[in-house]
Image (cartoon, rainbow, N blue to C red; front, side):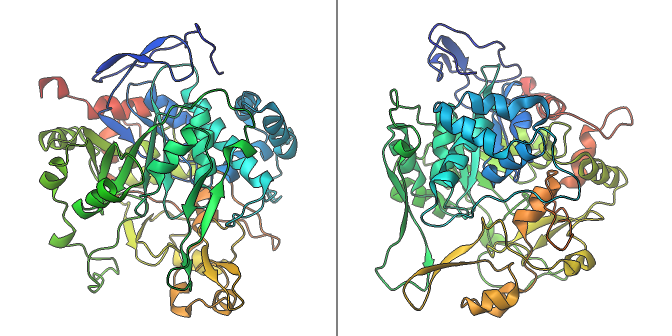
Length: 511
């Protein structure tokens, strides 16, 4: 619940942390609480709904930075309600939304107390365009609010929101919703988010903000923007919002310099992510041949100049196979504030993966049989994308080829200019003939997978198409997936987020 002046929140956060701001103001407007200035461990923001509020809350309550994923968040919350909202958590959060009518409308539109039959389709909301509908904006803002609200509920820890630069159109609305709930950090990668710091500044004051929209085929000098006016959501805001700290996910010192010199506002720090991390990876510099296994080859040019970034004086965290006590100590020795860890948390009991996905993966990990493939083609974005090889998922080529191509969620669509001057939308994972008809190159469709549907299925929300086909999961993980065995205890392959944190912090007090 939102807290009034004078109220205190119920539980403090536990665990290791340097509390350098011991009397920070509660962002919810009451009391004075202890807040970590910088966490040692950032839990990765893995979408869709793998880094859901339960995982972020569990990490935050251990004194580290719990992060919710903003990827497809409007779709996730709508499907949670359609599935019956077990425990009533999202309804409780939406009832606390600052504009009561919007929260009520969300619940009335999407909540189904009886849930959804296994062979029934999820109702779809409209797809994002440069000028989204009022209904879609309300859904997105309220979803961002609800996820952060639940992650922060009942304790005093810090919570972040992870977004992708490549999924640009929903981001202003998601940010505003998260800020209404008091989000502490925004972490963003999959591109160069130079406009986001200024957007955060504007949203904190409830000002209209805009984001530049890349349009393929646009003439030189032509610019397109998506505009978000917070007062379309909260007509009469009561005071400014807290501006969250902004961390850019980068893969080179060049990108760090770009964020420092060209960003529209303050960048508060960096997550330096190497190509061994899960999800999307930065492409290797240069266009060299693929490896014998068909994966991108990274070399010396892709190594990050840590000393250069350190010289900028901003805090940074290291990511990409840093999920061990030894590597945490290594990061600290290099001058980092700490590490970002994704894969270890993704397969913990607190994550949003289905039990079948989690247990199946960890069984293969225990047997030493798990592999991760850096797929240069899977993502419609064109970025390399890590795919975990798990039976019954889209990692199996035979199953991938059985799926009829379809784009019905649309978060990764790109905008293009039609011959008549209007804007169109296309996705390299949609039916090939449709993509080519829209002016796309046929070679760009090869091997593309529908990440929107695949990732949603991995979190337990598989769409059932009109043909009766049920979407299969697509699972991403980092290269250190086999190293999850360090978290297994007493013959069990099950572990929690708290287990991950306690393991990572082992021996640190002697460091």
